[in-house]
Image: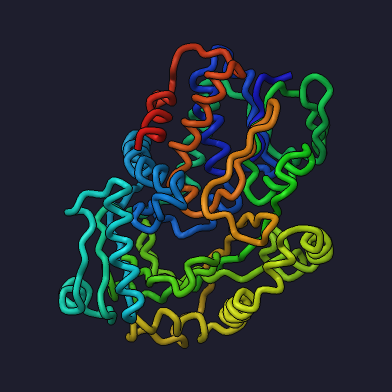
Length: 430
């Protein structure tokens, strides 16, 4: 019997367990449950590795994402320093290729300032100024943001695991939750036995919606999954830019990304990700995708996802993304629009693919912000995608402070680098 069980050992679930066990009177009463034999095996390690600046997020429609990204930058920077992990504050260039893109850049400037960025951290650049900063980049205009970083979130999550273990948190790896029932406390059935918890935090990423549905929660929502693929740039291109280069998305209302030029914390350069629709949160290959197909299609036929499937614009964009998956040239050429020196034939090695899950409501609309649903003695973090890793620490602190305040856990001596209540207050005030 545990006081709180956190389901999901990604960067968010591990962060929540870190703050809960770090302030619990009895840390062993907090359990972190992960289906894999190690943590951060999926999206938390299979991403761009960027600590995103909050200029990309509408402060009205993506309020939680924007707040969390702003606070997450300083928190991860401090954590990296404490743990002696790489945190490369290298900045990012967001480029516009046409007039509509330039209009979007001006909107990003306003969003960034509303979300807390200082004027010196976010600058509008004309074509000539871009050429001075990055001679190999071609665009009409750009934004340069100095408050953007490159890290390894898998390493960060493993460092958090070391800390919560040292606090005394119970860590249960290789246990896949298969069913959850309520009989006073929650009974969590796993593939190797059963355990009980008075409170459940569902932070299971691509499985979070399914787990919520088991518990009769958020049944008006479903999720759609998108595989993001990468191509590694050969060494001959490693000096092509100093910065990561992002382009203004052509269709910001959909979860499709125009591939970026990514500078990794370890110096590698990559092109990606695209966003190929797949049928499950672990459909990295064809066999798993086919296995997930029929169950997902049956589920989608009963939910708002069927409305998305008949949206002509969505179908057209999905076809473009599929083409970029099947054709290396099609994908590399999308980056070649602003980085003309690259040649598709020079790319020979794929990077690691990751999958993001986007929540859809009953009307067939993609939910724009983090969705947190509380029901009885459970809390479900849904629609937690990019910039999810950037904002994991402040979101986890806010959730932990809420659970302590409502009496789900008895507080003891604080052991974490931050006071969760103080971080929660900053999330509310900002």
